[in-house]
Image (cartoon, rainbow, N blue to C red; front, side, top):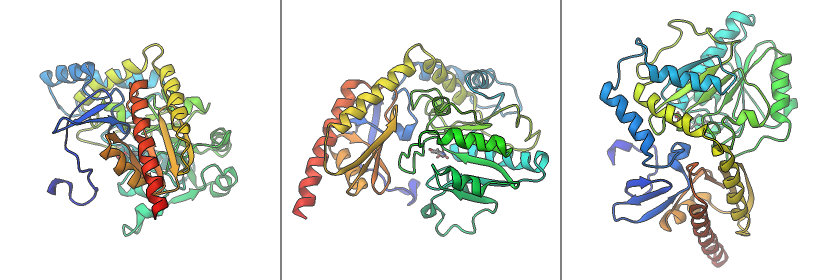
Length: 390
Ligand SMILES: *Cc1c(COP(=O)(O)O)cnc(C)c1O
């Protein structure tokens, strides 16, 4: 497959279509989707409202540049700011690009409004995307390998260690950038009180707090944005993945403190805030805001967690998560677990060598959760036997 180059190891399945939390390959075989295109398809596959909205805009025009006003984009910006701390939204195309914009905003803010401060402190085990600044922000050495020199002006603090964060921040620090829940790093949860203390430290030292909610945002944790559940208030937030209902779309949400800092010409993108993607994004928000929708995510998350715990496998070291983002730390090769699950009709992945991640569509039913868990149960028993046989 030449189009993929060699940057991913492809799953050897040809998916032809999807419906809700189910996928079907060419032979008609059914798969339970516990991955949702990596936390993208919040409303599963084939959502009629998303299709209708996108089609409606496509019939008017697909693209006309950011130079022109577009009502879909304005409406989405309004939905995002009305439901968050934000006063303005900058639209881009991917999570990595949103990270770039957040970093540029923080640097410019520091240069102009904090005596030239430029440093960004991020967390070890974090993930912020693959472009060079976003990659530098990503606190995992394995992703930096052979791409050096990385960008200057970054420091890394231990996640959940407030003393380390205090030590690494000072007059030169423009921003602290973190994921409320570290997703790609293995679904690492914030320790009780940690995010609040980090936010307090930012206030005390006049440092911007950037929350990367590309994966944790938009209902994933049972909150519309994860930061709300931890009772903090960032200065900048990035969104992506599910924002465009499956179309490429990301956003940088800024508070009044940093709104306007980038300024005209301060950044640009040809495709950012594409009207078709924004039309789909408006449906995403409308659905997230439906009564009880967020509540049922919390309930289904608990149901999933209980199901996973009941597996009682000696191969499971820890299960952690919130709402419908769950990581299972295993004492065996996580990638092999994911491969075996796929063969048995369940899609999951392994963001770390010892962690499998579950981020299903938010509309998944209890019945499909049960089916996914029974596949995992079979995979774990099989693996236990194999490991015993050596
Ligand atoms: C996926 C992800 C990104 C990068 O998004 P892309 O669209 O792949 O560039 C950034 N931050 C977090 C937290 C993510 O999960």
